[in-house]
Amino acid sequence: MICKNKNMEKSFSLVTFILALACNLAFAQTEIKSRVDKDKVTTDETVTYKVTVESSESFIPQPAFPEFKDFAIISSLQSSQASWGKEGAKSSMEYVFVLLPKAIGKLKIGPATLKTKDKTYSSEELQVEVVQGKRMPDFSDDESLPKVTL
Picture 1: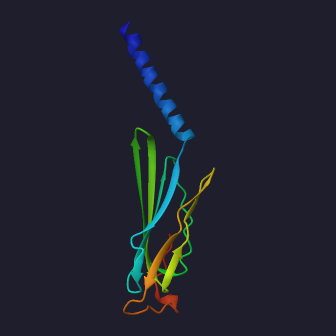
Picture 2 (picture 1 turned 180 degrees about the horizontal axis):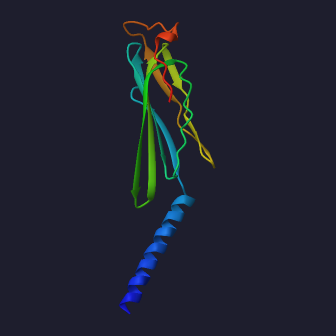
């Protein structure tokens, strides 16, 4: 009699696990966020722009990043993290861009977008105010800047 109860407990645990996994996959959630470290800088300073994608899906495609027309990309990096908890598996990707302003004024950074098989997600549009610093970098020849691609 004891063996039957233990086998039933194992079966119940396995069924519960499979149902939890199926629910997690059925209700996969994805979120994309963007932020800057400073919303006001001088022409002498850089802005760090970060895009974070969190998802319970097993594969996260790379997002489409905004056109940084008013900024020069000085450097970039990406990192990833995966975890397993009560809610199931969760993956996180972070993309970081160090930007140098090319102009003065209220500069906009458009949203980053992420397309999955079922839906398109967008982050927020951001604004950075740039005021004159000690010098204004000359970006008439962008060839002097490092070219960065992900």
